[in-house]
Image (cartoon, rainbow over all chains, first blue to last red; front, side):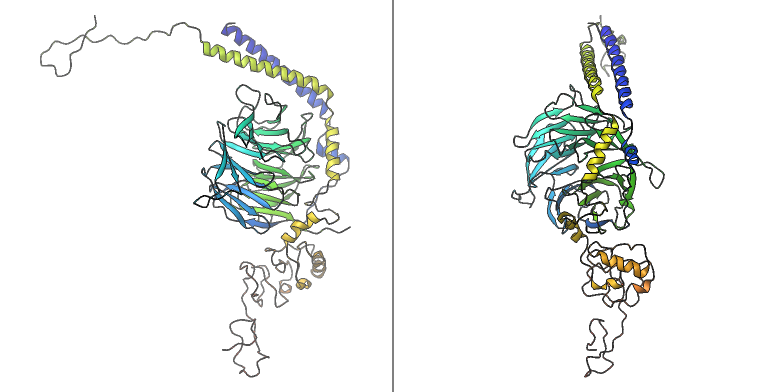
Length: 377
Length: 221
């Protein structure tokens, strides 16, 4: 076949592809008979209302000397690991604010960190293109630092995000600037599967975030600079299960909804969205202009344990608490006392859902919990 | 025949050597652009692959449920699950108490005048709000000291007790002493200006009064 013939076939295939996309979009539109807020209103749902002291800042964790980029809670709810531009990981006792470990990293450009399910190890990665594993029980070196016990090398771009597979200290998933996600076997240090990439159907730009389904750990979602989120099955690395379109700019953050059948996204376009994994429906858009009448990018999101609340951190320091059912902002943690003074970069909910931790460019982490009172039944 | 230019400084009066012809690069040979062809083939394969994925998705979309069913599932799930961060009526659970005690230490008995909206002593808030007719009080700045609060009206009610810790700038109390237990300077910055009478030190002269600290009713001058 000549190059000219190839180009003709290429054009024809592109037209077929566009037609199919149109037909699929039409089918989807016909099935979008309502959104979550419309349904909730039809059911007469009352919005969540917070009193002025209901969600308060209970703790401020001070110690980093640079911007905080990432945080993660342990499963047993009272320890947090944070990663900062100062080149350190700090493991905090969230109850007492004590620093249990302060780990100096060989590469200071760290972008992500995660606790293993047992809390014995931490994974972190960044601009060195390597995901490093640190065992918190290992002996310190002569400088008093915890050594890196395993380096997961192979990505051709920065590590933007990492998460351990639930209940498995030996496997984790990374997202990278090389447009791929990788499932790693930590024991061997080798890649088990590569999702996306040059010869596979996957993201066409940097992957910025990954989230593993808490109900089915074989399923994970990724968000990318290509403005899509994709759903993956770890048993089928050759292609994404589904691509989710809708955002107009980079998808900075993805998080699974607690029921495991939906996931949320936060984007550079200033909106959060809720997608259904089985049908691909975009079920809700969460969008509101800020007090300066501007739209600010969403940096990170988290759902409360019931899914009723969606926490979203923004580049202007706001942290909106969305009522997910009615798509209304019910509180702005950024306007409360003791709020962060700069961009919120990361959010995480404690394992039992009783507290939220936020990390910021102001070098602090803050813990927010319910400070009001409930009537006892 | 190629002309050879003589080297510099070869001598005065040496004959001028003929100059070289200007270079005239030839057009590249007409061999097939294999790299370009392979790239096109690869792109075509990827497109055909995407087409098959979309055809599969289109076929499976015939069985998709409408969005309203998904919304109902979400609604049912959310309403059925307890959430410690939601301000709703619910039975206190162990986990919701977990962060509650972190949030505040038990309110002191000074709740009579001070609004303590920390979650540990809800009756303090109720009593105070009735007393001061406030819809609500903002909570303590430093939750180690639930006695610190920001009352909106009237400021003189803030520091009625002698042990009250005053929040900085919030109460404007003139007669508040810095409690010895107060370690948080931003919380208790009121100066001590109490007067002493030394009633328990009859042997000491009246002039020897409490100077250094209002917590010592008698001290030596």
